[in-house]
Image (cartoon, rainbow, N blue to C red; front, side):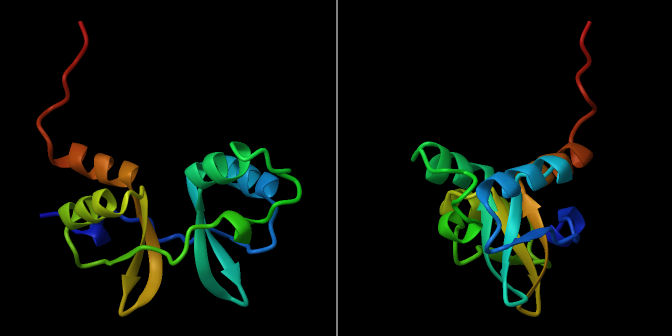
Length: 133
């Protein structure tokens, strides 16, 4: 059974807590990711996702050049240990209503896993692909 360690991304991408939403969105676009960890005093204090940007900033009519990541981030960061199964990660995401989990080893965040990562992992072990005629 695949584990979170098999499916996660180990590169931790983040932004300073003072980064504006406009800068956060630009970094997400350039890094081709849907979330970024928020850093304050060299610690990960939250996570900003595309959903956070849409629901907490854009829909609220906020000035995206002034509102900071710290104002809209989700905290605390929902985490799962790397040895847990992908099924556990999926269940946790469903229970918490989130699409990203920080991945920990011995209590320290070492990466991230997303719904997309779980889908890709599931495709690797599923039946052959259906082709289009």
